[in-house]
Length: 261
Picture 1 (cartoon, rainbow, N blue to C red):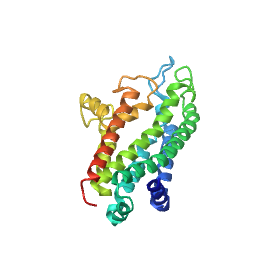
Picture 2 (cartoon, rainbow, N blue to C red):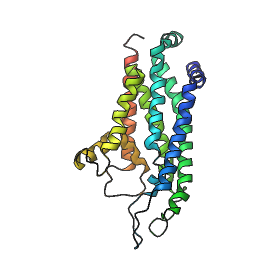
Picture 3 (cartoon, helix red, strand yellow):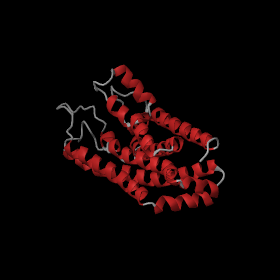
């Protein structure tokens, strides 16, 4: 518990981490509201449409995850740049305990911020989408308390948490904030753009597999309807991201005990 208290104090005493949390929420909610305000419906006169309005209500994580990745990298790697990590390990000789404490603090803070961002995004986006034509019969208003919608909204908040923890673990493996951010962007944002359905950057067959095995598979947790471009189910995709995060944390814990500070 002393390690957790120490990491909690460090986390909230650094201005950059506080702003990172705020920025993650603002970017996620702000971009969602923008997309909802300018987007148009694909519904036909016959009352048919293929959009997933819940996904459209949570699209701000496209940009919000960049703030989350940066936050995780800073928490994981910044102490190596300043040399403070030696003091941390001197105070807590069991290095895996330090990793666990950092993960607990970052996970708690990011879960609260992620859930705030996802619920706010959904509630703000719905009236904007409805004003742009996302109405019955093609798009009946989704109920927040229905299982698929609640799973998507809560899952979006947890998705951001897992992404932060993956970045934290990679930061402690690489010990470089910049390198961690670059690799995380390569693992998440680049596949998100390159594997977008209809993207000319890769064939559809390869894009489907990228959406299945890259960390962005976790975004499938937002799906509330099956579409032609669906690559993986909600829980299966979420499991892929959990596997990435768990593997990175285990690797970080293993390396911590085998390398000098």
